[in-house]
Length: 201
Image (tube, rainbow, N blue to C red):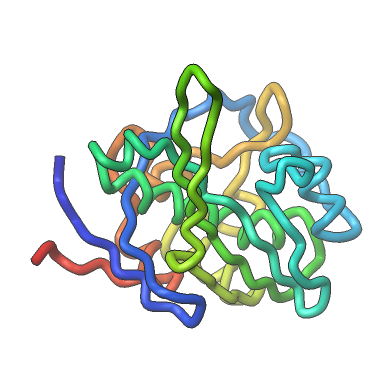
C-alpha cells in the first residue's frame, strides 16, 4: 500500500492523516433532482447521514454558515493503514461542503472536519477527539461548481449525487474522486480543497 503523508495546512490547523476504503452503494440512476431544504440544520436532519443527536455534526454558526462534522475512524485501522484518515477527512469535508450547496440555497459555507479515533472493546466504545488536528475549509457555491466541473468531471453540483434505495448517495464520479475501491483520494481534489500532499520523508 502506498504511503503518503498529507499535510493539511489550513487556517483551522494542520493534520497528518490517512484514508479508508469506501463501499460503493448501488444506485438507482438518474431520476428526480435531489431535495432542497430551507437550511443546513433541516438538511442534515433529513439526510440522516451524520447524527445531530450523537454530536457527529454541529451547526457552529448560522451566518456565515459554519458546520463541524466528525471524521470518525477506528483507531486500530488508522494504526495499520494511516491513509484511512486522509480519505475520511476528505470525505467529511466534501460532504459538508457539497451537500450543503446541493441540498440548500446557501452561497457560502465553512466546514470543520474533526478527527475522532474510536476504540471498540467488550466494555464499549471510547473516542479520542483530536481537536488540534481539525481541518477547516471555506468554499463558495461558485468555487464548488468549478471543482465539480474541473476536478470531478460532472456538469453541475447535482451530478455529484445519485438516488439510492434509501436517500441520496455520492454518484459514481464522486465516489471515484473520493477513492472508492481503495484507489485513494484524487490528488487534484485534495488540492482543490486547499490540501497539500507531500511525499514521505
